[in-house]
Length: 252
Ligand SMILES: NC(=O)c1ccc[n+]([C@@H]2O[C@H](COP(=O)([O-])OP(=O)(O)OC[C@H]3O[C@@H](n4cnc5c(N)ncnc54)[C@H](O)[C@@H]3O)[C@@H](O)[C@H]2O)c1
Image (cartoon, rainbow, N blue to C red):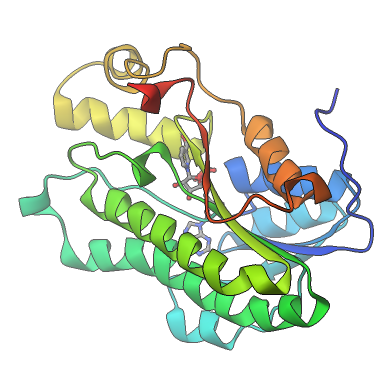
């Protein structure tokens, strides 16, 4: 059974990192609501598969290639900057190239795609910019310096665009989830176990789910529905903010 009902007939959306996890769920939610979705991801086979499944358009693009991203033309009503990845490492051992790569995918690409998309939105006097941030856009955790700094940057970027875009009927918001059941989290469970020298079960129990009051992973479709709500007319006055979906983590 689907969650909320929003009519996006006639709207076009682009979702990055849409071949997997949260991005795929957001793409499915927007397509179910009637939007034509451009599925953007570096994973070619999965991009085509998801695009086929939702009757969307595949766009295979490596978001770390800033020159290529800058050339991308985007005539869309909705842009969801979602693609992201994690590296868990002590700061003194953090590979500088990896740090820069994470920032290119998670901060520079959202800037470049937003830059490409806003002119068309401003013309239509309607648009929705949604950036998938994280509880780590608001709080830090050790060993995640590239990720946490990129997400904090994304929060600031979203607020800045909200101020610029508001007069044109365009909103910009982040969605900040705690741990969602996706391949990215499954990989993190393994690497956290290595860094902390504990078992994978202990990572889930003692690291991931200590802060949330509600002790379960978030399902990707729950984030898809929040994105859908932000695209609705009811959300027209929500801008420059962060919708936190964290089971109570940040209440502490
Ligand atoms: N899963 C969680 O618990 C969680 C929590 C908070 C925030 N987030 C954020 O949600 C977003 C999606 O995460 P997910 O858990 O669905 O991850 P995921 O690994 O399941 O999916 C990420 C997608 O991004 C794509 N991607 C990675 N690098 C790319 C690149 N260079 N160019 C194009 N595409 C690229 C991957 O191919 C993949 O399809 C990320 O920004 C992540 O930081 C996730």
